[in-house]
Length: 190
Image (cartoon, rainbow, N blue to C red; front, side, top):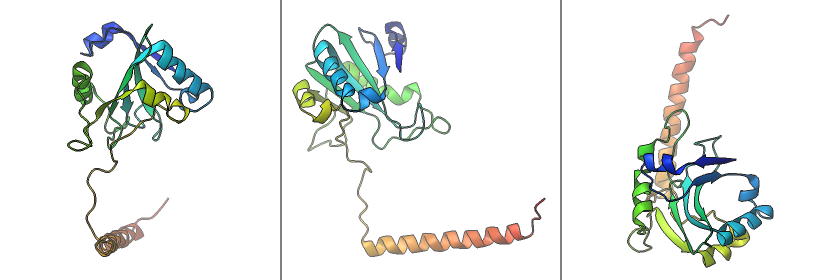
């Protein structure tokens, strides 16, 4: 699927780009073989300058990954900027829809081109660039690059503390189920 996002719309949205932007999501772009060929052609025949990693499930069913690729024709890619808006971000079509203001940080990063990722000082930084040589050297020229540790902060509980918490929650659930069964016992089904 390719969706044309015009220069006029990108300017109206505050994403001041000097090109047309397309979203490409197919089995061929996600897997090896033909997909690898397409990715290599995209990196050598076009300037694939930015990839926005979107949360899973915002366009389709949960688990479906979507990326927005920003590229221009004519020059080969030298480096690719990645914005990871997927790791630890939850949006759904029904309860927490992705809205324009959710991408304000991406737009700011896109316009300023300064990395927010730093291995020592900001390992959770969402904006990072990679030289094209690193991407071409990846298995199947994969563009699925992650660097943010999923899950945020570590859980500092011991195994015994974790088991105690699980047992307490289990007791709470059991009590709620017993109460629900009492309520349902007085209801007649048609």
